[in-house]
Image (cartoon, rainbow, N blue to C red):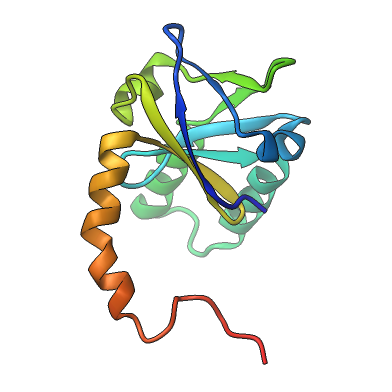
Amino acid sequence: MFVGSYTLRLDEKGRLALPVRFRDQVADGMVIKKGQERCIYGLTMGRVAEQSAAAAQMAPADTAEARMRARMSFGSMVEVEPDKTGRITIPANLRQYAHLDRDVVVVGVDTRFEIWDQATWDTYVEEQEAAFAAMESEGMPTLS
């Protein structure tokens, strides 16, 4: 499970040192891909396999929407393997998509993590804060 928010920096070659708490989870390889709201999603290979199986079960499979979803999701995936220091290289096309320059935030979101431009993340949080505060619950199921 990926949790927490971490303010980090990309180096001049587009490398990012993943949070220490995430490194064991992605040690066997991972993918990064375009995420929604102009961020990058990071997924374990196991999670990618689960998504592939779930996509295969969606019916009907040969619709314009299904093809678009598969192309946008699987087509933007890049397999990456963290180096010995836990760094991954984010390709230029994904850095451009998410407007990543130097200051980034890595956010754990349960089964994935997201990489955001710091200013974009700050704006997103500010815009969503009132809606989150107004929710009847925090959005998570409560355990009795």
